[in-house]
Length: 293
Image (cartoon, rainbow, N blue to C red; front, side, top):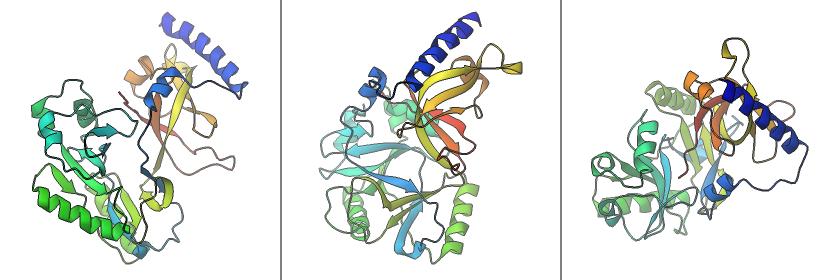
């Protein structure tokens, strides 16, 4: 593991330089990953349990790969084109769509590998469903867009194109009961979309996500060497959030990740339980590497 220790020293020196320099050029890796991303509606975490859930349409939060269909091509959220088979995209309508490529609960890693292959495998894509939850070009409220999505899916009449089921809950108790049911069945959580909201790109409280724990993304900018049983390998990831906050993630790391950590410049997803007074994530835990092409 001498190579890793030597690499650690170089990376840590780089991190210290980064922390002392507020004006930093964007990493080429990140620049490529964020090339012209589509303007999509993004969710905010639901922290205020005083929100009236009866104003929202609720759906299961699918652990899939976000994909935007512009009427001609399918795109990842990063702005890179999805290398989907010609037969798959040929069945999609000309209407812009937003949704998740999904293969069922607990299959994210498998699905992620399938949909990012430069040469798609038909047998794998035959197991993929495009679950639609938005019509970005529709001028109506979300409740109206949901009805339009259901009508469009019915007209298309193709099992791989489905509408994400939307439902209502009466109060916070019913919302919690639904969250408990979904999580117990292997689901990730719930999405709440305000029924009267027009389509708005960017992060908005019109769309909220509710999970047992929060999650977010950060860029890897360095490594902290391990100690004790982790001597000679990764102890913690040093990461930077989009707002510039820097912190370490030392839990949730598998042995494989500690031996071969995510590269500098890559983006990782972590879970956490609320924020500290300084605005940093409390109890951050590594979840996975975001796999942009």
